[in-house]
Length: 456
Image 1 (cartoon, helix red, strand yellow):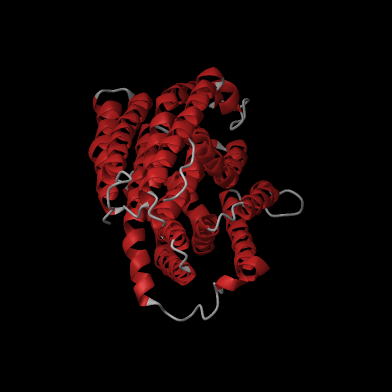
Image 2 (image 1 turned 90 degrees about the vertical axis):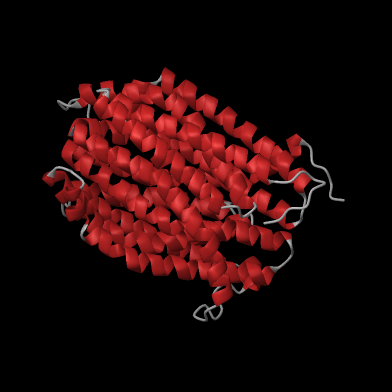
């Protein structure tokens, strides 16, 4: 019988693994925040274009990253069973699938302007967003490789390197984005395209750093991760595909919810879209904490599931949920207590649009108080479910919540009921409430009690 761990032991183990992941996710998000701040100084139309362009890139990236995310529970469970060969095979084929997806998806970025015009965006915003994406979209390949290696290293509990490489990327991005956008320090003024160049360069840097670490660090060489990398392993390829596609589609359903909200906010107005983008950046920073804890929970759950330790798995799940709630409550206090100082960091207070952006953004952050708790709950539930490699049913539950409930509610409240941006965000809250309730119920009903026998 395995050792029974106390709640405090579960919390310590989760935080040791999760805090560096939280830091790396926050640093990754800061890459986008830097772009938002710099473009906010440059111009409102340019800011709106990068908001819609970045969110479009993220939608494509998040679908492809399902294969990378599948690597995390597969490697964790393989290590829980002591099977290093299965671990290596899963990571290699995760890299294969990520690279294939990156090549296939790039044309969407090249012709993104026409797509955005068809979705009702203003011509000037659509053109600038395309200028950004034609360059930044090249980063989809290295970004997906990075995501796969992050999953691999997290499952090995090598999270410190992920944190420090991402922090270095933040400084590199800031050092490139500002002069390339504004034309400082002898560089040309490229505007939104300059932000794209900086983003692509940073993705390449991060990929090279993690490939070098995962492939050549003495302690990791025994896994031979890149040895005979070109040889196909169709059984492992199919396994990563089966687990990763539902993960990618689940993430697409959620990120598509927010992308659709950005598109609908663009129908309301450019200033409203800019305020929405700023508020979403702030909320997304908070979400990164929950995502890091959920990733750590996936690894811990995968290890315990691989060892068949269901008692500790359920106990650890309860601890993870409590930690997520505590984090969420602290974020609620921040959004309600300091909305204007936070929003002011993203705009030029002397611009004509600043008062309106502040007013709209402050209202949206008030709604984010409920938003953050529910978003944290649903991502934690997904992290728990992925740890036991349960992804297909959660995909359908999430898709229904986001698109069957959230999007219709946002549209009706914003345009039919006439509540505008407030109604749109209220619909997001409703969709997330459905998702968190159903996914949590799925986990606790699906995962057996210690005396039961689990059947995948």
